[in-house]
Image (cartoon, rainbow over all chains, first blue to last red; front, side, top):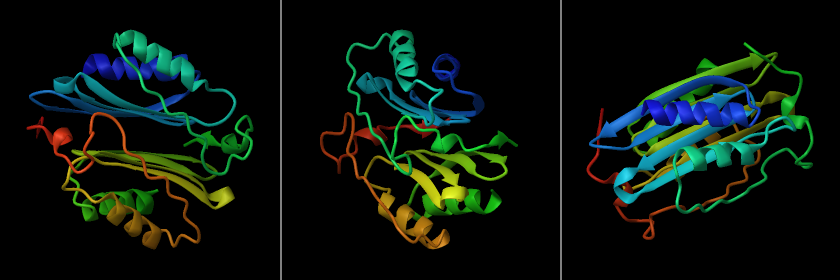
Length: 108
Length: 108
């Protein structure tokens, strides 16, 4: 679990995100679920080692963060054999390159 | 933030999920990001009160949890005026009603 948490945090940082919090959970006999909350949204992971499978979400907003860098970082760390990526735009951000989601927020 | 966290946990429980951990973050002057890790995956939320907008993910697996119940619960609690839902199947679960993702896991 520690390796996965470190890799997820590293991936977030590599993408240019500001890491705020993380929470990870182990399962018996195997498997991990975890999340990294970033100022720009979140990264999550759920692993099923018994199927050689992990489901990762990389949800970012704004112009500062590059989610593809996080994805590359994780693929490398987890020595991934096969990747299926779905790229989605969502919500209020009519212009995906816009700064809407950044507002003028600071972290409390 | 407390109201949102409680609502997210209640939504997870209403859907039949087992809540494991939650982590929430406040922003200044407004906005919350948070996650509830459940044994069956996760729920996340990001709010932008300045746009009257929230982005919610309800990621579940297995046959026990009904994500639509969580969605209904949140719509009620947040008095939502307009909802846009994207329903996705993903990953190893070729049979969406299957029990693959439940394996024989226990929580560590």
